[in-house]
Image 1 (cartoon, one colour):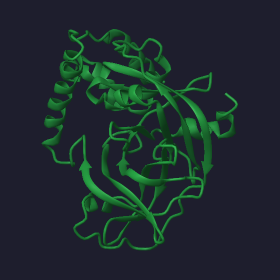
Image 2 (spheres, helix red, strand yellow):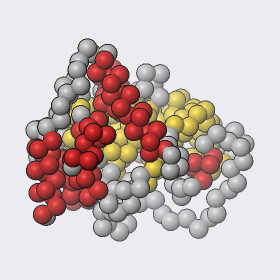
Image 3 (cartoon, helix red, strand yellow):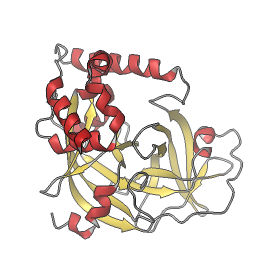
Image 4 (cartoon, helix red, strand yellow):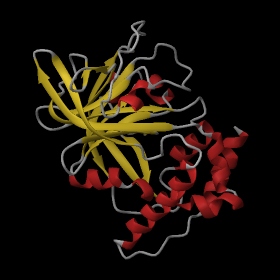
Length: 304
C-alpha cells in the first residue's frame, strides 16, 4: 500500500480510464485504454472480456505490465498530474459470469458509463453476453511515478504525408508511446508525435527509459460518460539516435473500427466469434451470465 501512497490517490481514483500495456508474443508492448479500480490492499483491479482476451494471454506469458493515467476526460480534474505505474499482473484462467469479487469495479462502471446499464436489460442480453464474460486482472505495483500534465501546445501539427498511421494520429493532439526499457519491461509516456521522413519523432520525459525496439503509439478518446469511444494502435519499431527517438510505423490496429456506422455490426460479430474461439480452445460450453446480479448493481448505480 505504501508504494501507491506515493501518488495522489484521489487523482488516480478520479481517472475514468488509463492506458494499460502488456507484452505481445513478439515482445511488442501493446497498450489499450481500460478502466481500473484501486483495491484497499494497494493492488489494482482490471478486467477483460473473453472477446478481447489477448491482454490475458500476454500476461500469462509475461506478467510485466505498465499503466499510465494521463487522459482526465470525465474526471472533473483540471491540469491533473499523470501517474505511471509499473508492476506485475496475474490473470487466472477463471471465467467470471457474475460480479463476485469485483462488485466495486462493476458498480464503478455502471456509475461512470450510464449507457452500459442498458446491456443488462432483456433486449440487449442476447447480443451483449460476451461483454460480461470476464477475466479478472490484478496488478501489483512495483514502481510509481507522478508527472506533470503535458502542456498545451500552440504549434500546428506538421503534415504527415503517407506514413502508416498518419491519418489516425493526426486526429489527436497527443498519443501514448508504449515501449520497453533496457530490461524489456513496458514503459508508457504521453507525447506529441511529429512526422519525419521515416516515422514519428517522439519526446518523452527523462524518467521514461524507452529503449530501441518494438514499440507502439496509442490514441484513444471517450466522452464524459465513457461513450463514443475510439482507439487505434500504431505498431512499429522505436529507433534511437542523435536526433532522438523515432517510431517507424508498420501497421495500424483499430479493434472497434474506424468510426463508420457499419462498424458496430462487424464489431458485434467479431466479439462473438472471439468469445466462441476462446471457449472452444478450452473445450468449454458458453457459460450463462448471471444477469440478475449485474442488474442489481446497475439499478444501485442508477439510484446513486
